[in-house]
Amino acid sequence: MAYLSPLQTVIVGAARKAARGLVRDFGEVEQLQVSLKGTNDFVSAADIKCERSLHRDLSKARPDFGFLLEEGGTVEGKDKTARWIIDPLDGTTNFLHGIPHFSISIALERDGEIVAGAVYDPVADEMFYAEKGLGAYLNDRRMRVSARRRLDDTVIATGVPYLGRPGHARFLAHVQAVMGATAGVRRMGSAALDLAYVAAGRYDGYWETGLAPWDVAAGVILVREAGGYVTEVEGGNDVVGTGSVLATNDHILKPLGDLLRAAEPSETPP
Ligand code: 2AM
Ligand code: CA
Image (cartoon, rainbow, N blue to C red; front, side, top):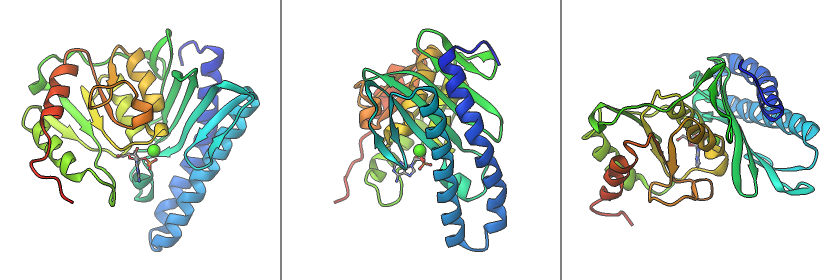
């Protein structure tokens, strides 16, 4: 691991510790495949256990900070300027199906701005982390977004709006447009890892809408510190608040954004 600041030491340490239980529980999931109900309950318990571990360690290290937790909701801190935004298990559907692509996502927000974060893939043992002004790293290597300039050379990731959620028609229009203009579209199922992969230059871009703050908060600082851009698909800057994300390098930010914004569905279902 490269040199870690005191804050990064806290975040990376909490993620690694919580991940140990998560990986053990992932190993158990295959044994539970016979009962879907049992598996669902088991995964919920694993998710909550992981969140408790993160909450415990981060509270110990920074006792005054607040929390926004996927499972536990808002926990007010004494210091109103600082809160952790946490997703203990991003990629829950993958975890449930025994697909080894999920992550722990931890971000620190100060005065409304994300200033540090980590996304950890415990199966691949890939720790993506960044702090404002200090750059972005994957394990001990500095990360940099991709340098591709031509949209037809790019691989772009996305996510499908969940069953029962609005936005499927718009999503299909977006995918159709991007499929027709790029080298490939990928859909892996962990928004936090999708953003980390953009920061690492693996994906040239990523877009998704309808996400929650904990899905995207850590990824935002990873991409920005890796030299990339993160905006709403519609162009605004409140990515964490709206859950609408477009992350790319600087070359394709405009062409990809324009492509998505031009591709609205011909008819919107009721
Ligand atoms: P999760 O695994 O923590 O639920 C994939 O497209 C992304 O969508 C994942 O990061 C996933 O996070 C998130 N997601 C899953 N269910 C969702 C829901 N009902 N609403 C919004 N986002 C969801
Ligand atoms: Ca999530």
